[in-house]
Picture 1 (tube, rainbow, N blue to C red):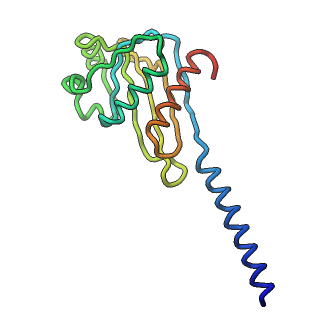
Picture 2 (cartoon, rainbow, N blue to C red; picture 1 turned 60 degrees about the vertical axis):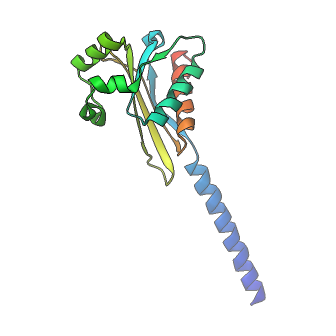
Amino acid sequence: MKIRTGFLCSISAFLISAGLVFSTGCARTPRTQALFTRPELITHSRLAVIGLTPEQEQIFMASYTKAFPGQIITFVERNRLHEIISEQDLLQGRLNEKTRARLKELFGVEALIMCTYYDGDEGIGRKKLRIRIVDSATGAIVGSVITEARDNFEYHCRTAIKALKADLQGGS
């Protein structure tokens, strides 16, 4: 009986540790997908970030600015954007041509960085950050990326912006 109990405990311990290694290994693998950039993205220096909380927006802007140290980047203040963009447009992730034109005319916005931070597909504590960068004059998407990883917004920002920068420089 004593040998059988020891043997069962050993097998149980092995299965539990193997299960933990397997599950944490799969769950912690960050993913970047749907990545692309167009060359004109680098020419846009007056940007507006929409779709994030004020704190998330601040973290995103800091990450973006640090990723492009040689470029002069100006972000338009969020309250000014809300004067033009209706809450309905923000919630549905849509901006019509007239709204984009007003943002360009009134604030000089060259590109809109439209972000969504939401629950991921793979496990508890996983999040996704979807970024679409839209040229305010043409409506063309000039950059896009989705990250999926643990729930750490700053990590998502750094990962997404690093991927965009690498793709823009032809290194992804």
